[in-house]
Length: 70
Image 1 (cartoon, one colour):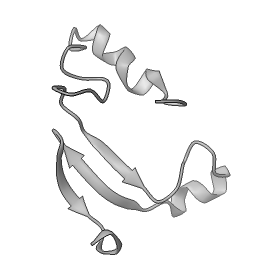
Image 2 (image 1 turned 90 degrees about the horizontal axis):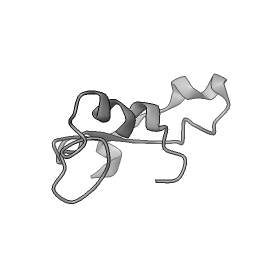
Image 3 (image 1 turned 180 degrees about the vertical axis):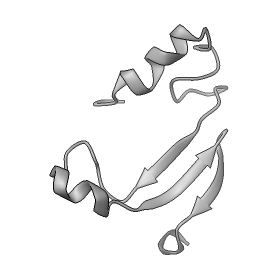
Image 4 (image 1 turned 120 degrees about the horizontal axis):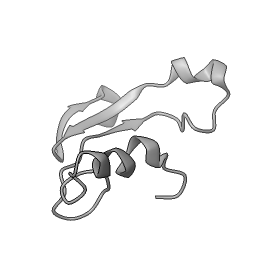
């Protein structure tokens, strides 16, 4: 994934010896992720708080979908 901050993804899994099951989006790995309404890595800092969660997944299962996603 281009632009992914590895300090929040794969790097911590090495420290906890969990890189075989966590830390990157790959078949067979557990995935917790959120789909946001905008890219918080590129919007102006003043606009970050306007970001909405469109969907959330835990262990690869969607547990929340915003009404606009239905």
